[in-house]
Image (cartoon, rainbow, N blue to C red):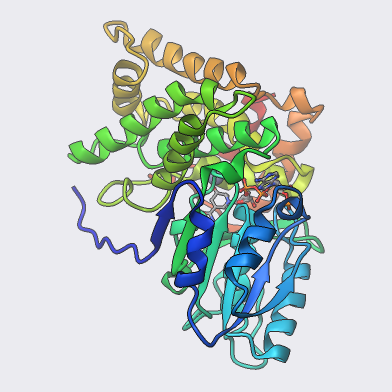
Length: 386
Ligand code: NZQ
Ligand code: ZN
């Protein structure tokens, strides 16, 4: 097992009717900015619950954060924060609103003249951020208790991420009933995103970390078991609660402590969103199976462990077991309505591969637990997902 530090400072408040606890959690005497997306919180009653709980607080509002939050929009919020002297940010919505809030929190504390986009390229260091918290309405990203944020830029068709301990939410409220208004497509997306987050921290090479392996396998098995019920309409409370907690645990940094991590599926997937506008999880379901096939030699031992422990496959014929495990993964995605091929979206794999190769070559990108996936390998993976 590798050395590690584990410190997750986010307080999670989980369960039915938990939004009312905002009243006690929100710090006194702060100017709060309530940040939201395209309006789902008005239609499902979450906005009203939040406003009731904050009736004693001084609250400003900023709405219109897009799915795959845009830098251009977020900079308008940064301006508002500075003008009004806001000193606490509350994200109400899904991962995009929360990631946007993390960016606003960091950008608002930059010294005058600093390049805010540099936060995403790594050129502008983050020394502080405004405190932030969340009311989460879409289980998927784990952003509610992690230090990560993914931001898109319209002007350049880019999608980049940053991580900073300064942007862990102080607290996150997770009420499974707030997910009842989600379209099926978003539940499906959240299930696949959580599954792939787990895989990115599991499917690498053995590192003598048996507990982390079992954590990851329990998450994968629970997601597979829970998925059909989580998609049911009318919603089943316990299935939504189980799904919501899996999504948090899959990326709250716990299962990745002390083990190698991959993240190449995400790295390549972000480019498919940047160039073609696919939902985040849609890109993962396209890239991951091809990446497993492409990297099968390097991931051999963990693929066999995955085949045996998650899918219960006989691994005597190793190559057959690995291919069967990949096919089981694809079949799971299909069973919840998630396509796994570029052609399902009418995207020409050759064109997509060339665009990604060009960009990765220019950036000198190398992905994966061995840094073995360079521009050419990423192109091969994309062509395999035609
Ligand atoms: O904008 P509104 O109107 O709120 O609607 C949203 C949006 O259209 C809607 N929605 C959210 N909660 C709802 C709801 N609709 C009805 N009822 C509810 N309860 O769902 C749509 C998608 O929301 P979004 O926040 O974009 O989805 P998600 O939570 O999947 O976030 C995706 C973003 O997170 C990034 C992705 O790249 C993408 O930009 N990620 C962030 C990570 C992190 N911070 O650690 C890790 C992930 O790997 C991921 O990259
Ligand atoms: Zn993800």
